[in-house]
Length: 387
Image 1: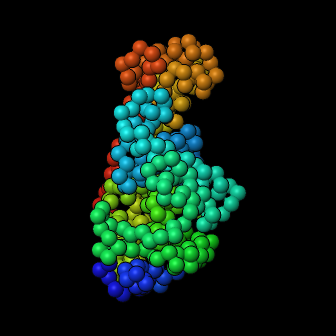
Image 2: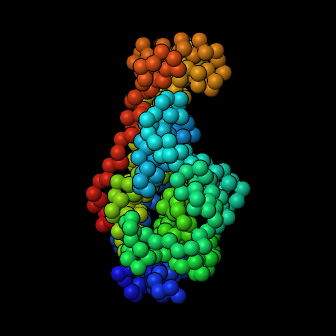
Image 3: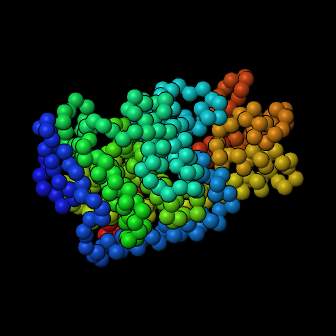
């Protein structure tokens, strides 16, 4: 590591001679200045707008599945997984996908882990135990499953490009003998609320990544942690906001900001970056949700109020997954296969859906307009608020 003294932590030399970084317990000392206050005010305002408007959406929970899937795809992409959102949704609907099965499984495991964490928060506070549970779900049956799923590491890890060693690594997290002390302090801070919630969450995400408590999967768990904290702090009526799209679109800046906190205590820059992500992603999610709901309502008007309930049911389902088969529709709506087929043909005639695979059996259909909205890359607008 190329830093020696930092207000964020201390460098220690282990018995075997390599150096590691131990972050100081949270919270750090930092000054509130005009830029930080404005950044926080803007993020709070826009997140509050998402919370209010999200509560007004006619079917917010229908949109959760594609948003969670998008988060899983992008968070996994940061770690090198190549699966696309369309491939994951198509595979889920029953289509054949040429992507490496391991990539698809890693995304599915992320979804399982996130849903598990959200469900557990209904009865339990966020804790080291819950973080371990989430990690276990995340790592089951995927590459890295050898890395003791659900268990904090007992050996040293490090962060750098392939081929580096402990002595040449850019960043080496706390050694195993200091790990539990770091995690104990981290858990205590999780339950403190002496700072504004978004500042609290920004601190928690940095600290988790600095500690790097697992042999593998730390980045994904750290990003899951943001979502779980937003839910636990009741900042949103439903889990609509995810930051992986922002981190993926600004990947180099993301890693730079995390590193600069460790090396130089650059808390203000990290807060500004993180809060800007909250603001931009809140606007992004709101835009996608509104456009999808507008499409759904327009299609419902297009087919007419006299249309049978199966057609209307399929249209509602498109918000969950734009890909589907007649078999899946028949099962979800509890109707005969032939009934589902007739309804799909009506939607195909109207141009709402189209066949995505030219096969004679088990045809897969897609509402491409919804898929396009979901797959749009995140737009990073240069801010003018001192962020």
